[in-house]
Image 1 (tube, helix red, strand yellow):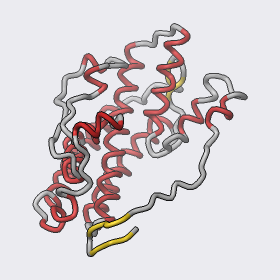
Image 2 (spheres, rainbow, N blue to C red):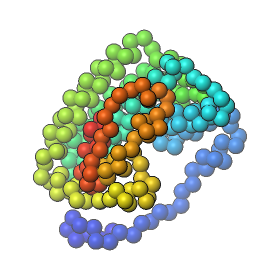
Image 3 (spheres, rainbow, N blue to C red):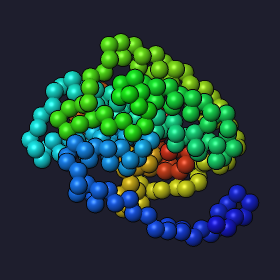
Image 4 (cartoon, one colour):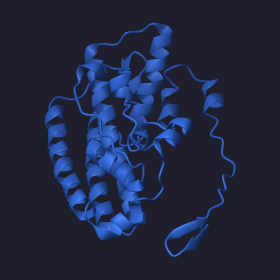
Length: 239
């Protein structure tokens, strides 16, 4: 990478060699044993990977899970989404010199991992979703624990935005940087908050709902400029 001050003038990607062998590993596992592999596709957010795999397997097998199972899966996916966004914003902040925002975000993320541990017995590789259900129900009083953490997340995310949203240095290092136009986002097949930050009003939870998402009403966060700042804003709005 070559820099002119804080401007990247040249970058040469060095991809290297990495093959995790997820498909090969699955050849010797049954359909529920493979859940442990989906944990490791993104160990920071394993619950979402568990659900995605289980949904595909259940569709192939013609299995319908209970409504309670669907609701719990949605709950866990949304907690994972919040934890992922806090990680993303926190790592961006520390790379750009905003250490305090990084610490705020990671503290909140640990609170969410506490919830995962209560429900699943572990914080990261949870293997919580099974094909046809869950390894166990959420414990009594779990709703109160979730609401308590969400109150802390709401307050803490406000603190992060107070630190960053009007910070001149943050603006200098995120606005008009790394722009992905709407057309490029579509061409590259970009999805999720990155696509929504480029003005694409598409959220699979709304446009192609699964696991009872059609029963929940929420606004889709969207921005127009497609730069680092807008991607940050979309993620914080989703939190």
